[in-house]
Length: 244
Image (tube, rainbow, N blue to C red; front, side, top):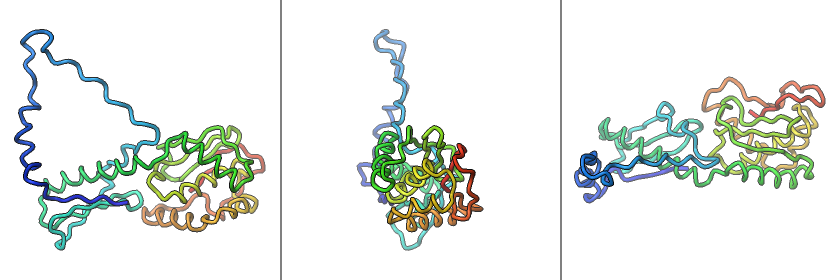
C-alpha cells in the first residue's frame, strides 16, 4: 500500500495560509453574550477497527532522500515501519511537514479497508464453515493493541479470539490465516500434528506464514511464536493459545 503526493502544491494552495491567517484568531468575547465563543464539541471517537496511534508514530518512520526525485513524495508500509521517499533537496522543515501529511494519508487509506470487530466475527464464522466444518464457533473476535510479540491469541475455555492491530493493512489472506489459526486453537489448544492438520485445508497457509516470517525478520524479532516446533500443551488446556 502506498501513498504519493506532489511536493509542490499549486499557487492557489500556497497562498492559503496567508489568506486564512485571520480565521484562526481568537474571537472578541467582549461583545454581546450571544456573540461570545461557544464551547467546542468533544471530538468524535474513532470507529471500531480504526488505525491506532501507533500508525502515526514518528519513531517508526524512515525517510529516504533521492536525488532523482524532483517534486514527488511517496510513502508505504514496510512491516512495522513507514518508508517516506522525498527529494534530496528538501529542507528539514519541509521533510517534517510531508512526513506528517503522508502518515495521515496512509492511515486514512488503511482505515477504509480495516474491518471492525463485527466484521472480524462474520469472517471468522465464514472461515470456520469453509475450512473447519463449522466446528469452531467463537464467542468474540476483536482487535487489541497490546500484542506486539504475537499476531493473535485465544482463550479456548471462553471462545474468545484477539488479533494484534499490527495485522491491520496486511493482505486479506494473511488475516484469514491468523483467524483460522486461532479458530483451530478453539478445537486443538496446542501446536501438535492434529492442530496443523486442521490448517492444511487452507490453501494459503504456507504463503501467509512466509509473509509473517518476512515481517518478523524485517523487524528483527528474536523468534516466531506459534512455529511448528513449539511444545504442545496438555490436552484440553485452557491456557491462551497464540499465533506468532
